[in-house]
Length: 457
Image (cartoon, rainbow, N blue to C red):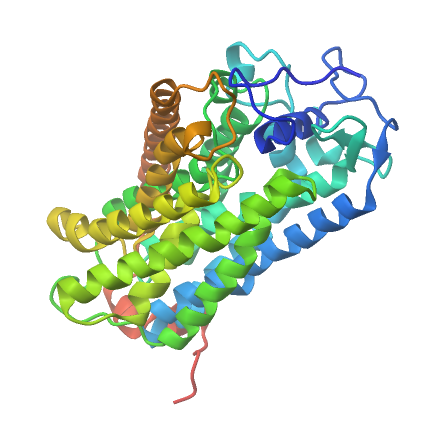
């Protein structure tokens, strides 16, 4: 059985990135010349399969109802249902697109990469052709395999949450039709190429050695930049900077934030694709980093504004979750703590200072938390993966060289997502229009778009 070429950076046998690379190898057609997985060999461990199923379900709870409630509580009451509907519908649409062509474009192609195959896969597994009850994919551990269907389902949830995150940048004023079309096109032309670049063995960033354990680049920077571009191009909400636009139900936001945290254990620890010691380490990092970030945000806000807010605390926790995502399986616990502290402080600055200075209406701070938090985590992964700082990279690891690779990955994500998002929005503005009418915006999208209200009085 041929295996994927390891990353240029030596890592111990439990490396999650090696694991992911080898698992992705199983997405290739068995009959293709570049096949890297033999069907029906090795053993499928029921414990590993169970963990992957649980992780998949946990990530679903991040989106439905976690993200939906988190965002819904932050908007005004007249727009609550519109946010829930956008998140819910995007989840349904991307689920279908993933099994039709998304999985194939993200995770097929020649192992050696080169040319177009370094940036996007093919359609060999469109409509999940060749993915059967008997097809398996390899993890890094010799002889350990997973049903390919488990990987398809797990990665589906990542594909769903990325475009759903973008909703937070344009809530309360963007047309429902424009939101859905944007989500479809962005998923196709921004998410799938980034997933292939970073996570597939033939992808250019994977071959470079850029580390992204669970989606800091692929999901968070990618969607955060898209949300920023969309917020700017759609324009601010009516009354932005003049009227108070307070969250209507912070209890929902707290519940949604806690569901995000719980679901994130599947997001991060599940990305190891096996149930072993490194999985536990990733889970512990997912506890420590958001706790540190929440406290850092709270204390800084207390000093700056004179009060510690619940919204600040839960926002800090999400920032810490975002920042530890690319690093969860490559840094130690103390590295996770430092990453969390940095994310809490830097994301607070982005939300309070940068946003005010530049004047854009990123309504629910998707860029400030996911974009900036993802950048912080991606860069610091290159630092705290070092063995001398408690990380799990090999002895030949160079912090300077790895940080340079991380910065290249960040730059590609920012430029690609920004450009793709801008082009899509220009087209949608000309064809569908981006915004609802002023009257509809004032009355609220719940009633004007969906014909119902979240609350009866």
